[in-house]
View (spheres, one colour):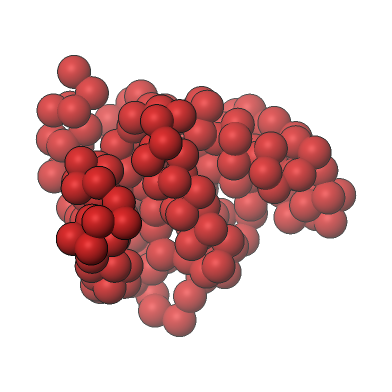
Length: 180
């Protein structure tokens, strides 16, 4: 399975963020999945990629040309795809992925979450989306998504596509169930 992971290029202030990035990368490798991510070498991005690579996973990085030219690209990836811009990067990640997991991150990660959920809402595709809830990081965002459905700005079926978890085993069981 190809799992797109959205996450920060910074490490965040809690060690738990990097620890969960490592744990997710290790889980991707142990399950025989492929990591698809933004090709960064720093922060959460670098951590999840390094852990997946160390575990023997195939790791595909997708990065805009200007980011690669600025030296932000991980140099030891299995596959590298260079796009024209950030929009093309998100499109390519969405196209390649079987499922999405968002680790903690900043505005770029939030934008990716919003874009993918919006595309799912208008039926571009239907793929599972997991908010990896390290130390409750995504609890409030999950509640906002549920409120969008409650207030009828979003269908409940679309809100229900979003799962909140920080347990790779539960995520694995969920993905096996929905991707039969």
